[in-house]
Image (cartoon, rainbow, N blue to C red; front, side):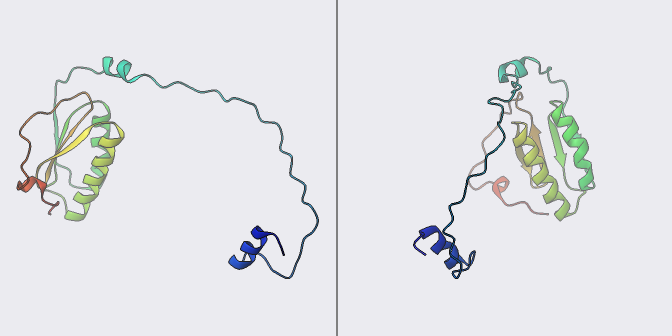
Length: 146
């Protein structure tokens, strides 16, 4: 058993040390594969920005259940900024919804910002949000509380 790979396999318990295989193993030939696959180009980010309609509304939602997230996602994908008020939800479902909204905004290159402990703003990529930057001692930096 002079093969170091074989020794490693025996040590890991993946092979038995009592069998020696001195026969050379022939490589398996694979069927020829086409050298290139077709690639569909993605639209450039600048072209996407020119197609974004002007903002004429901000949607405010008061979800009561986690399944209300689907409606939030549909509006956000259309480029509508959304204010989510979680005061009518249980703490566990509110956490799930915040996690979902965070993933949604990240996936669509938007932002999520905490306004108060249970109110969040989802802003799409083409919307600029300005205001005061919260200080280090701000209550907005506190952990989500239900």
